[in-house]
Length: 191
Figure: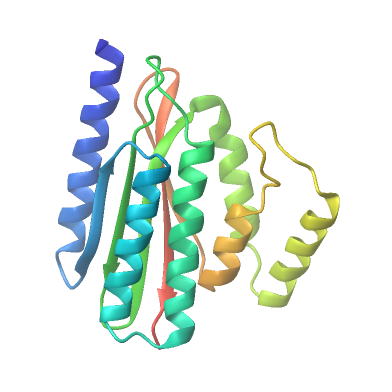
């Protein structure tokens, strides 16, 4: 394992533990995963998310949103998450609940060169105050049907924002001259 990989892995572990620690006050951590994602891991996590939220007797509307956002976020990390110099992806996924909301926090590597575009995309989504305007933006984006080099049409953040019904939270923490940790937080109201 190269020094760079160790640095990213250590950085992610530390960040993950800080997020878990910050949620201990007034939140119940339902599911926390720190590690590499692959199709089998995502399938297992999807099953765990479904089991955890179903056991809580959450109303059907928020339940569907939580599951959809979780699946979309995991898929986005797998497909679009950056890799370190050794070709490793570093990710984490945290699902937590308090009496009024469920939060889905994800993190993956991004190249520092992608940060401004990601910030701009998320800020654009957060600028919509009317759900109808956000849906119109989605439809406009869908009609353009531009497929990226990774096979996506850029709809992931838009659909997460639409399902959440809340502003997306995000942060970037620089790891090196090339890579940063990108954290995305989605919130689903239970009431």
